[in-house]
Image (cartoon, one colour):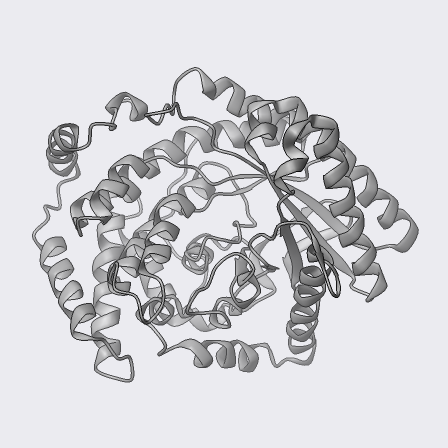
Length: 461
């Protein structure tokens, strides 16, 4: 499929953006329309490790998970739910495993839909298995298995296809540990975008052929890594200002999925999704306070601001006092969505949205930049040079720095450590050329020498 670059915003202003509504809603699954005026819980889960010893045990585990979620949703009167199955490696390395699990899950979901009328859909996120022991192998022997996993899931019950792709990670990992902003920009904004352009044209073709939805990607491998290293307010392993610069760049990368044929909803762990929604108008999934079962963040309410699906990131399946983990977390998500949906129905959605934002706005630079008015500005910076994957990623980084500097003059507090990292990053980005070819040439030479696991052939270079 052809790639159509995004060079303008889907919304005329940031204030138009709210939760539960998107410019281009997505119809999928059993009666669902995502981004069409209501929010929907998206439950994410992982099987217990011992369940992966055989295909039969893994299928049974996912049958239990699916039944538990669907039963709890009906028990509490939730009108709709999305299930996201993030593949464990066995399911993507053996595409028939993923296919049989998708079929088993969808059969259960159809039974609940037919008997109780609950609207539902199944998303399968294929694992990015394109690696050997020592290297990424993005275009090598595993590519055909990777795409076969998408194909078989699409044929056997998955309504939506997604992935957390890893292109550029070998350079990013080297760069982020050295505060090397050119390397972060090259890894996420250039190499990551180049890889996504290749795989998402193929994923979109699979989805179209099988009449399912090519949903979206997320920069979990890079921007989320930066966020996790940065940690909380006591941590100084990585400046939070650098983590949010990586996140801003990641929006230019994650946007490529929609340019190559994906239609949303964006995946939950893409904290960059509000920026992507502002540009592309697609519905998005988000996570925040409900993902504490998987990780902590500093914007647990703020991320609800523009979500269409509301997710828990992932939780291992086991028992809790209130039921199994998936029952407990699906119920929590459903009640959050009920509140947002009442706000939509009563015309109070912008009031609730702004309360979500205000509760986290000045807690940390990361939440400050991702607040929808500032996320919209990052989107404008990307769209301004939307045809150039390098310039738009660089624009995003510089606009991110500008936003933080403005915030620091208001109520956003920066420690000396954070302010110094921001100042150094600003100098680094302002010193970079505007010429994509020159930047590409310089980086290729530099990182071929510095990063032993960097294989340019992974990107057709």
